[in-house]
Image (cartoon, rainbow, N blue to C red; front, side, top):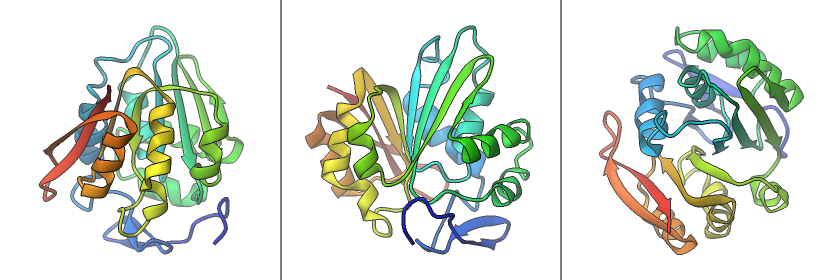
Length: 218
């Protein structure tokens, strides 16, 4: 499958599973709670959110993390969000994935519009979805994030999204004192992020996952 093509999925207990990477898009236990634990708490959000705060994400997936972020932000001012996605989902699959989370329901239409158009502006958020391989798209990106959601599929299944060169690009596109959070505690990922300039901490994961990683740019 070439980057930019729509991604085929299967369903297991109501959770979408990537046919390309044979990996679920979120926890079978509770995807909403997992995202809150890993990506919000891991980046000290929503406490840090303020006008102009920029969140960037590797791996847009179902848009669940964006829905969670939007539910945590009501201004005043404009929050900025950018995501990179090589294999976007179709809107019908996004709707089926998110409708099970009541707090995500108000944002389903917006997320589907973002998947269609790549840019959406609301009263208090400016959203951008960059289609294509992040390894080539990110070097050309001119933005800089205050917080990163690193949410690609598992490193052993999707190693391209966790390589040292891409993690160095993440650091290069991070504001001074900016942070990252990810569900994985894989040693090669933590080493790549540390080499890129982050102070990396392994901390308690969600549910059955013993550990996750978070960090701040040194």
